[in-house]
Image (cartoon, rainbow, N blue to C red):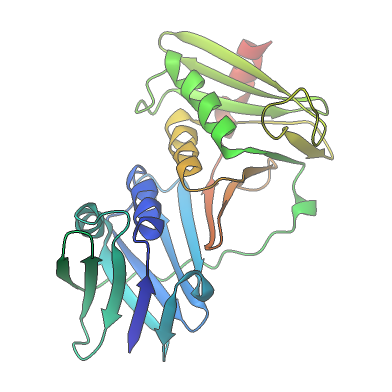
Length: 280
């Protein structure tokens, strides 16, 4: 038996909406255990991976008496959750019927209860074994308010087509600043983000912080970075960006009181020299 309950459906609804902006595989496995649930989804090009973890204590009620792998279509789930109000009471239940999950949305303010049954889908893919890479393995780690990262990505998109796979964005980290750069059909854009001191009185938001062993500069498709920034609507804290040429770049958000979501993306190494030249 599996039964989860949230008194505010918005918590999970917002996470699913954030996933829906990515070009992910349509069908994914939800892995439930007694400690919470996880999902992994690869983007259709195979260059990015999303890993979501929500703890059991993030729910008002959580019962999972055995491990359960549940294959679902993300688009179907997103359509179901669009029918829910943010303040609906949500119950997710698997009981009796082994290949169906029930979503129940209770709307006390309007006196409605909605039931949706989704059939499981067969997914042959096994979850990737993602090693826990210690922060010491990265050459540079950047921590900034997630809202600030989203603002920067919007500026980067102003000269590039965010859906164009040829539009390149790069992140360069030095001791005193983080540089964001975009090269698109319309031109280029560069944003210098200086490093602040914690609780510096002149700043209206938390400062950007850097932990760096070596200077690093990496390039990606702009569409990835722009999509990752959308998670700022689900996180009122920080985004942590971990960079090293030998490792996939990690964008991590803490979902307040619920868990975390991580985006791994492979840098476009072959374009790095060209981007470095344009920046210079």
